[in-house]
Length: 306
Ligand code: 13P
Ligand code: SF4
Image (cartoon, rainbow, N blue to C red):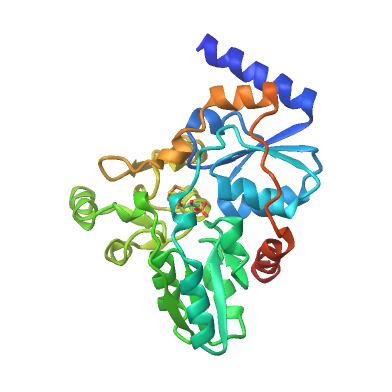
C-alpha cells in the first residue's frame, strides 16, 4: 500500500542519514523484516555485527540479541525499536542453582544458551545457539555440562552428545513449549507426505515426531533446498515470509500448527516502531555491568562454532 511504501522510503532515508544498519530476526513481523538490511537467526546476527562497519546498529528482535550485539561491538551504538521486547526464557535460571552445581560437580562447563541476559552470561563458560549447541558442547574438554536455561534444547543436545553428562535446568520458551504433540499428529495425518521440521526449543514429544531439527535459519535452508513438496514447520510463524521468498515458484506447501505459534515479544517490533527509533535514535542499549565477563562466553562460542 501507499502508506507502507512511504514508511519504507522514510526508513531508507533515515538509515543513510544516520549511518544505521538494520538487523532483524526471522520472528519479527514480515513487514519489519522487509525493512532490514540483514535478516537471520540469533547466531548469524551475533556474528554478523562484528563484521559490519557501521556506527549504529538497529536490532529488530528481543533484548538478549541487542545485548549480544552491544557486548561484541562495545564502541557502536545499538538501538532497539522496542526496548520492552524481552525473551522470558532469558531470565529462567537462578544464580544459586548454578553456584550449587559448580560447587558439587567437578570437571564442569556451564553452557548458556544465548537466550539469556548479560547477567546470566557472566555465570557461564561458553554460550551456544540452537544452530551450534551440539558442535560446541562436543568440543568442550569438560565431561560434565550444566546447560542453562532451556531444558528442551539441553535435553536434545544431551541425546546428540551421549559422551557428555548433561545436567538440565528448568527454563523453556513459552511459545515453543506450547506446541502440542496432538496438533502435530493432526497435521501429519492431514499431510502424510510432509517433511516435519522443528526448532529444538520444542518439547521432547514434539521433537520425536520431527524429521529435521534445527535453528530458524537451518529450517529455512532445509526447506528451500529440499526435494520434498510439503513441509510441517514447528516454530514461530515469522519464518513463513522468508520461506515464501526462498521457495518462490517452486510450488512448495508449508503448514504450521493451529493456532500459529507467535512470539509476543518479537511481534511488538513493528515497522512504525522501527521508523520512530530511527527518527529519534531512541532505545539505546547500554553496555551491561562487567561486560568483559559476559563477552568471554560469547567470544568462546564464536571460536568453537567457527
Ligand atoms: P534461532 O537461534 O533459531 O534464531 O532461535 C532464536 C530463538 O529465540 C528461538 O526461539
Ligand atoms: Fe524467547 Fe521463545 Fe520468543 Fe525465542 S520464541 S525469543 S525463545 S520467547
